[in-house]
Length: 344
Ligand code: NAD
Image (cartoon, rainbow, N blue to C red; front, side, top):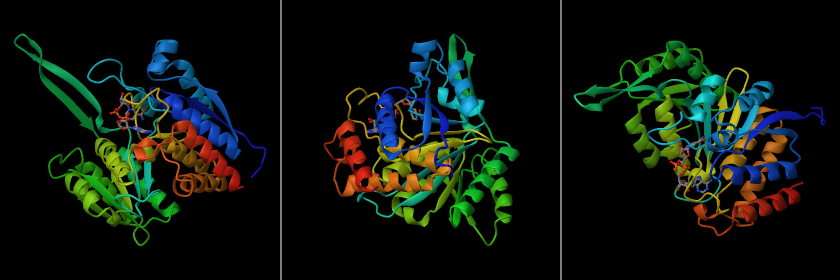
């Protein structure tokens, strides 16, 4: 590696606790000496306030040029209002794969959890085409939602999952579906996965599980799982459940991959209930940044960041409130930077 190499990346502070955890993450990356050159752009409510659009053209242009972004959570109004900027971003850059790894970092209800969830990011029920059918004088008497999975898209995400398994030394992919009821929508996903799995026989095994049973098994015996391959909505839900196994939403990162663009983030949202109070746990986004370091080919920096987070939690015993600690975001960040120094 050329030590002078810089990686240009878009930085989106986001909404709610977004700017707080993004600020912490950038400080830590600086202390680590991570060679990112940031171009700060806005999206979500911040995008609407700055440029009248939840996904302003300048933000899109910045990502299009750099093909790499670190993103804070974006608020999406519930029930009405503008369309999710997250969903638009995924569509715009065809970020078909969402990777959500969880790994135990602190002792808790479950030890030694190490599961990677791969979520199909462009189809299913999540990117719903929704409408109402009026009856009598009620314009919203009937609500309809449609989901769509293509064979091609299902095979593409299955291949991504199996390739990920091979590259990362994982042995088993569990395909999560509801093909007993949603026989077409999730049946095609299961069928495509089975077909792709044949190419990996002897290297990676595949089994499948109905989503409701999987949700229960994750609580009863999560150690049976290595990787989960999910349709969009099921992946959204189960990845929050996975986060719960390792201490909550403050501990779970995510990465969105397309053919040539990658956007790294936290699994959690903008947490309006704690925004502005300086108490958010920045670990999710920090682990997102760790995935970004792996992505650009800097595994040493990634490992140092991971070890420093582990030591801050377990040796320094500095933890934010969601982990039953008393540290503010700033105190955690300072302690982590100190740890990075001692790991040099
Ligand atoms: P949320 O993830 O923002 O919060 C759920 C709960 O977890 C809250 O009690 C919150 O305080 C807590 N929490 C989340 N992250 C935390 C952290 N880092 N440290 C400590 N506690 C944390 O989910 P929500 O309240 O359902 O959603 C709020 C908004 O975020 C919505 O507008 C939603 O659309 C959006 N959202 C965005 C993304 C994204 O940008 N990727 C993901 C999920 C939700």
